[in-house]
Length: 367
Image (tube, rainbow, N blue to C red):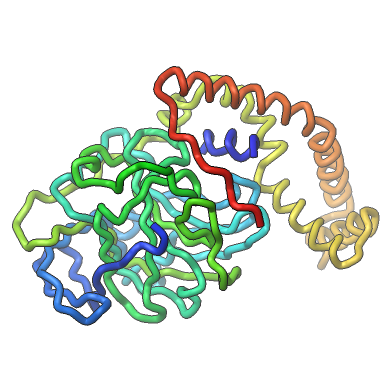
């Protein structure tokens, strides 16, 4: 848990989608919508922030980044790419329960925030795959310029194999830390969105709940959500100023904003918790479950590296020895590193407490 909390420094029950719409123009437009219950909903004004079709698609995609469960030891992975026909973007990947169970794409953190206080909520023009009812989809809004796990989230279930527009009013967004609700905090208000630094889209096994409950019929495996556009809406059709997305922080600016202690520990954390090692551990667990001992696993890895003659004997030998030594070093220093992480986290937590702190969270429900 300490590792998770430190790593996160580096990087509502089911929320209601209040309306569905077959098609969405890629500009602010007055629309007549129909709710899930089939009742006519009021006209809305849509304000696209990101359009994933046409000439501007690549630029829109470049403003997003991956945020999968690798930050907490998982092995899920995702990407946001342009569709071959150029009509949308694919948020796609593979969900794995082992060590996590979520994939996400988020706007790169903004240097100057978005002011969304004149809007009533967020919309997604999207189309989900056939397994959408067996995954939890969420939109998150970050109202502070940090990488912490406390954000506002709303949950929705897109109709499978049907293009639709999902409307999420701001008052559907609840304050969470990870998948758990922060108790005693009111929903997000429009006024609080006057400084919005980030928007994220997440597909996960976790419901928004007080105890971190998982979706009962969750299905891991491949997923795809087609995104045509993402933006904001007002409940009443009215003209308004165009909202433009400021430039995101550069890699250099993000690095400069990280605490010095984390910069110094970055190589160690990468060795202990880096994605390559986590994926090797996941593969080892799978092979162990199939009855392979350590020596047999090493021989199996060797055969994979030599398969088809793609890698020379010398290179395969060097790689095998390097990986084996790296794993041995990681195991040897994991205990003292864990103790060091505990101390560092306690110090950071104390510093935050002196500055005002974060709400205390209830414990996770036991399995």
